Figure (cartoon, helix red, strand yellow):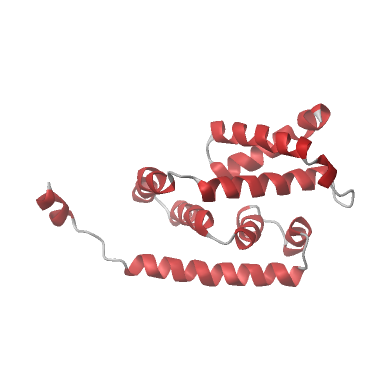
Length: 170
């Protein structure tokens, strides 16, 4: 496994950094992925490449980490909202919104969305990583898109407190 770490460590780290956006968390995730890979080495099926398997394990681990953070709300308020306010273009705000949605989405749908929308993989490549059919990938993306659209619409309908009300409470 030491050779695997040397060979695939950078791949796992880049994947974790892409999802977690924090170098320290990505380092921790990389170590955790390899610890889990060593413990579960027997589950590795030789019908896939080691890199594909580690990519999948890393994605699952990072998405679970994002979803299960105890302080998700605090992080959302401290990092995501200021990032939206400082955003100078639609691309940045879109990325922020997608990350927020991924943290709350169904795990399988989120994985499909990450592979296709963030990583730019084809549906065929995504199907291989998810161990499902291309049609299933399409269905997962459709369900994710409908769910995400509803979430975005619901958030837009929430009344936003105005500055005057906030000042009067102080």
